[in-house]
Length: 243
Image (cartoon, rainbow, N blue to C red; front, side):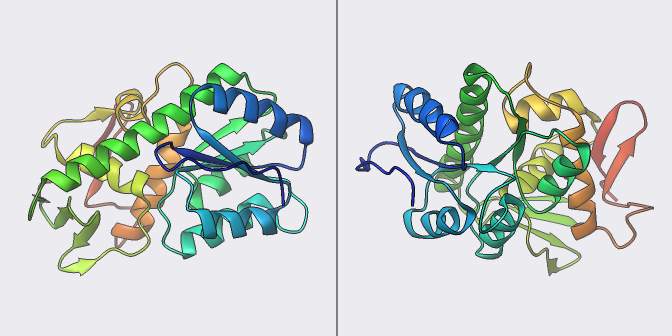
């Protein structure tokens, strides 16, 4: 199953799933240097098992894996209602891989070869957003945002549209809705969403925002070709309708 060290409970744990030993060794050195626990697997089946058993704080998941590919692993993790941030890794860099990965619930995507500085920045950004969300939820009670037909329960990380709970929203998708809903009547640019919700600026790809918005619409809109809740301001960005 990979190279797994003793886990210190007071540290964040990063799970890396990749079949290249050189990649695992590189990740281990750099991630542990940042003060995180590091566990790993070299195939999809073992990676899924570790994710479900160890409940890591973030997962680095290669697309091309033996026994079970990374996209399938990601999908199965989301089917277990785990909101752990998932960063997909791919050597191919094909747009279709990125879109599919984000659509099945990945939070981020990075193409090999990547710099360790970039990857560490993404890890920190995703962990920071998760920490901020959990901290805010712990301090609130019956804290909800209502914008037109959309209600967001900030304590439960749930979205409700016209009285019906939205199923299968990832934490990232919820955070996008939350950020937009906290700015009533204001159009938010893709760049602003990328920085504020994903937590990084320089390394970001605004197409990530578009894919995530499309996935959200599939869950909250009756007609995705004519959205009534999550609206596009062409050439600018997005906003939540107050109607």
